[in-house]
Image 1 (cartoon, rainbow, N blue to C red):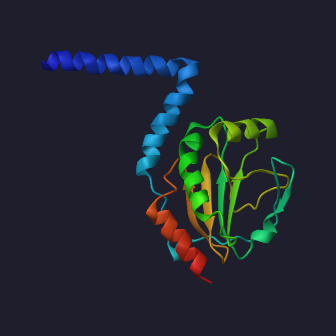
Image 2: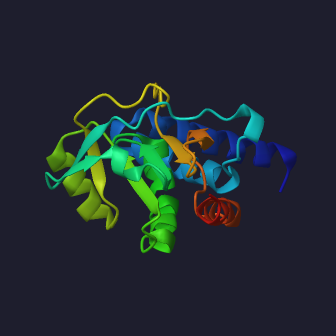
Length: 192
């Protein structure tokens, strides 16, 4: 194949991708695929001990999509994974399969709390969870969350150790079911 022909094919592929991005029905699925590819390579990193922020308050009330209330205070002294997300957010959707796998790995451990938090309609959240087949519980805030979280973009995921220190603070899609994250959570569960 000549260089000119390869160049034309490459340019045609670029135009097709751009055209697909302009069509509303195809934009979101393409963004999800791109974010999944990015998340495959992005591994959340642990914050150095000297750089960590400690939660100043556990005062936060949440409610799951079934109407059950959760007092964040009950998670104090446990390892906590908090993921702020939305069903309309392509990077959120892209990282959900790895978060589901991580949840499945640790769901039987009572010393690890998973909080998947969204401000969307309960019905929309329920439909999304059923459609995607996710088994973790989804929560909505019914009071202000601690200022330490300061969520201005999603997805945003925090991992908090037993001492209340934020040991991972990751914005954007990532691979949460990596050996590194599992080892980090295992170590956090052992410590205290």
